[in-house]
Length: 129
Image (cartoon, rainbow, N blue to C red; front, side, top):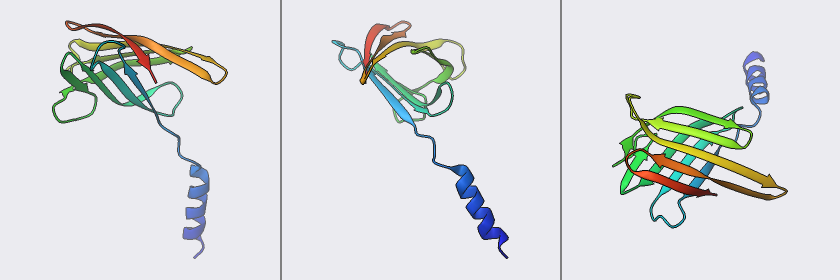
């Protein structure tokens, strides 16, 4: 008789607060319409759940989006304030884009900069929020 309410209470207490998610938005200064965005889950390391790249009139997306060229995540690493992310075509036959980011923090100030390289299209500097 008391098992169901007690079980529900234990599950609610054990679950605790949900892990927060975040996002990083980057633009290429001086290069109109070059954007890199990714959303991530809060786990040890890096868990990319969404990503979008816009450059040279094209739009790539990790998740299904109207008009977007599909891509898949091939590697992602977050280590010592450095982020390395590579995306490939859905068959993982060629790299579509490589992102390299470097972050610095001093007190309440932080800066993230990097590069976006798209083979056959170009390489772009990134300034991130």
